[in-house]
Length: 422
Image (cartoon, rainbow, N blue to C red; front, side, top):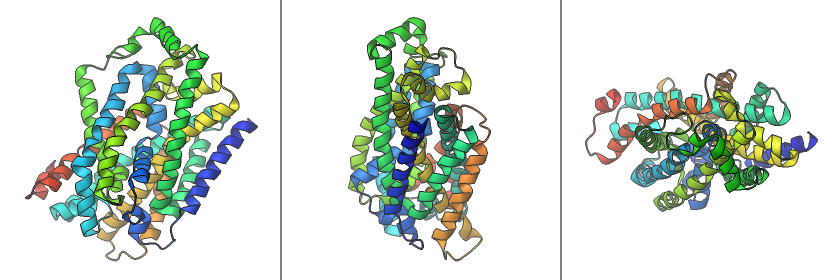
């Protein structure tokens, strides 16, 4: 137990240290606090976009889906999310160009500029906030699951602990701190996910032999319809379209386009992003499939805990704690960005409707970081469904924003009423 606590404390200390070193001034400008002065180059931009998009859903949700549905879920995530990177070139570069030209900071500000409609901008902000808060709640949910399995810490205490650490470095650091901690946490997640798959495979006689054992007992996990028989070609295709439409509408990903140093950086990450997706998504899904060898009878929300359950069972305390750090890295690197982006939307697109001055906006943004984290904790207190089910509903809600963005960027004449009705 002491080893587990020591490893996690060291990890949290490193993250807080990076956030402190990369911090911004308390009364910094909105561009500095929310966009890191629009100066993120290719490597740091790729790191923060990958880490931001790879959330608790990536580690815990996909491993749970791998357990329930098998390898049928891999093309949906690996290829579907990789295909989505085309939107970086289709809309990301144009978002950067318009944002830099007009000094835009938030997605709703872009909509207001394109459509000249304050009401449409407000509606766009409202939809983004409404559908992102449940996704934000997934992060403390997964933290609670992980720390409960690893340390025996009560679920809600784990939720509060990790949320508190995220709030600390996000409050003080802004996007510069978030981007550098994202890069570190993304590397941690990648290395330790590789380690988790190696450990589980080795424990069962190697990757090929382990899969042969699962194939014998659960052959449906190796078919396209999946373990529950639900992945028809239509469902497969609809998921891939969903990622294409919804992922660039994640507020935290959308705002990263504004923060790029130049449009060349956005074009370059479009090439590397699919490669990273294919590798990263395969590992937790494979661990979920192989989890049947250790826990053959999990059902529903229990399957979302398969990764920590398997690793705690078959590896020592040190390795189990390290791999849990990968899960924490994934969720922390998403939640910090969600908090930062949603607070910018509140302070720049909601508050000005009631208060004409924008004085002390960064301070107000920090207050909203705290309020949003409390909202996420409240939802995480009693999870209504599995991680995958909650995430899918969130993704569907955000996808409806895509037509408004792409038509506004490419059509010379656009009508706000059409966008509002859509």
